[in-house]
Length: 303
Figure (cartoon, helix red, strand yellow):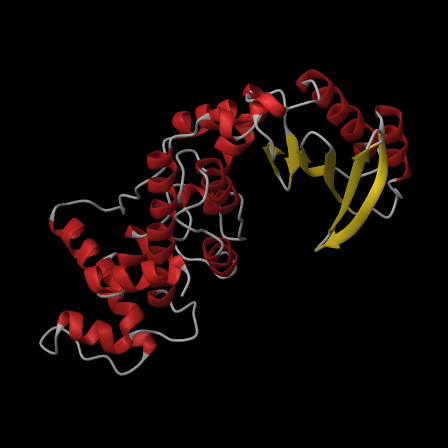
């Protein structure tokens, strides 16, 4: 069983599925709170850790605080669960929890037999307005929940802190058509992601946002390639392929090998990357494909 599946079970034991959302709604309603209070990742702290990670010679050297990013992963998981329950109650999933709704309010308040009656009841009580996302759009998602679940399935508690940060980064990069889905996880939503382009020089364009991912598998003391040279190499490759409609989505290096993941483009055969690497002292070693990316591995010529 994956971590997220265990987290879902634990959350159900604590909050009883959709009951948790409905109890939260009724509590807020009784206290005059008309909007759900989403627990969000602080934008400034997130951008600060992103900048620290990108400026470090290796991810481990960034010293990302494990307790902080672990809390963020759990926050994302909890908010994702809330989105799932809200999506069910909005009638945008395969099954509407009508029995749970009847159990929650009791026969003296309601005894619904179909979705229409139940939905009208929730609408009249203000539930659908209450559960909107921080950006003001609908608090349910038709296409964003499954991609986030797939990302959360990759999470393991013993990951390195910087790996946990990347998990969070990927979650807030997920989009849907209703509005700013990222606003359910981080202050400022997708604008926070876009703002990173203004505070970080080393950036890689991913999707509609600006994020960075440069990784190294070796210790700082064993880093045989000067970081400045790696930075210049990365910039040269990125500039060369961006003009052809492609971009670097991941750049990994150690003392003897460099692996570059590039988006495939019908306008570019990546031969230019091989020539750049040859000039830098690395020969083409291996290649592979993953989704819409091509992986090119180069080996130091002196080996």
